[in-house]
Length: 310
Ligand code: CP
Image (cartoon, rainbow, N blue to C red; front, top):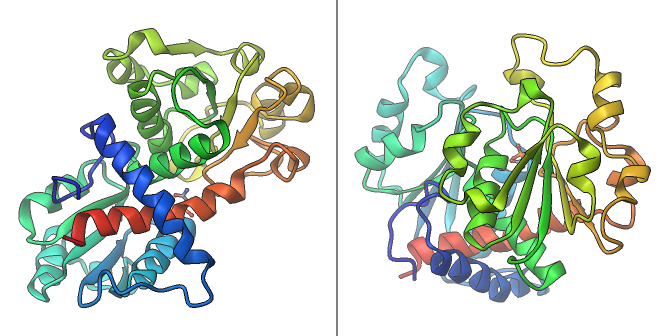
């Protein structure tokens, strides 16, 4: 089991803990292929999905993962809860805690919201994405997918391209991949490459490379991870037009050909087709985007099991 109560970010996870999660996910993936996709491991446990931002993949896969482990699951969203009447996050969390929840999976627009809850509640807290800070379960399912396809996490050239400034996925992946010695090329427009990226990278400087050239980023890449332009977090213009963005930073077939012949194309979703990625690349032979979604169930089963199963 993991020797921790909460999963708040990749930054404070050790390599051994990450490998424990990935190895456990390897075993639990098999449950999803059975005619009856259920094991009794978490029978009697109550898990609350508390989502203050929209989600398809993360919320649904946490619910499926919990149900496959026989836990009871309750979904709470901002629009249908008393948050819409002005109740604070802390009062909401204390209320759910008073109902003896064993685990709260939280997505929140504010960086650090899960960390605040972890100090106040008896339940285990899992970060399902906090502001532009971290999305640890996404990075774990990405690592699972990369390891499945490439057989390793070290000695890889990974290009992470797009809206780095607003991306919690980029931050979590950067922490995870560099812990294992992968070389990460971060590529974006100068306006979407935050100055704060320097702070994240200071520990593993030798593994991180910054560029504004898509050609440089994809050249010889083993993995290309495209990021969504997060229009909902932008209140100013970061590039002239979507068409121009695609011309310089969009992934099309020509650019895929600059990578290694066995490159894999990843995207955490949801995608803006024609903005950061061409449709024929998203649906093409190198794409593992739907494999990432499938991995999400096994990896989230592993996390719930390792945090609550003891
Ligand atoms: N990748 C991801 O977090 O997707 P959702 O917003 O659909 O959960």
